[in-house]
Length: 346
Image (cartoon, rainbow, N blue to C red; front, side, top):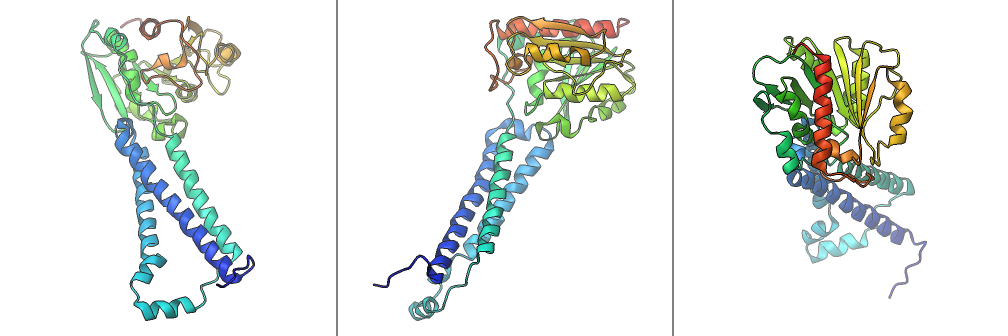
């Protein structure tokens, strides 16, 4: 039996080839399985902004192409295609040397692929979970009948007749846009046009000016407010500060990234939860100097971060001491009063 020394070049080449092959197998399977799991297992992916499902489809196709390359270049497949004598001659030939640089470069490519898969998995959105009795209460008929229409980038809640004002709403990070339709429906019932944005990859900061298209699409609306939940509130704040047509800013458990203290003509309502574990009361208190002096602050006692939409529990959030239904009714009522003050003529 032939002894194999650790420093044997042929042994090192076989070991390096095996490492490259099996690390590629792991990366390929991750590129195929994770995107398909998200596409097929989460309705919020296909129902959201097209950017995410296009990216997931591209990752799966890349994984399939890589798998085809691995299979067609597999040593096992090559050996099966040779007869016994050809295989003997092939084994007698020295294997192609794999240098340390080639090994590092190959492993770096596989690590990049796995990091891409991890980023895609992190983007998996929180799915809309109807709030049961709370959702039914908030969605009950009000002063007008509300119609809901949906396209690739927006969900529109339109009141019957002419709307007196409009609200464009940015969802929180990785939260399905439909998760806000119940809590915002009372605004449409009160006669206001509500447009919930489907943001690219579920991250509103990738397109903070997205509300512009909605405003341009509805020239009949002369009074506009923008709003947002959590990270969506950061985007809404930036848009409100840079857009003269915006008269109001509605923040759900959110605060601006930059000072808006000089935006004197902008009406602001900040609603937060006392038990919020993410946008904590301390963060809300620290954000007050960033907003105009006329800003109004409302607190839902016992409310948490995830109560500002219908998408279930959220990691890192606090423990509520009030029911979701009670909290959302208060949030909806405060929001309607805010829009009434913004457009008192109705």
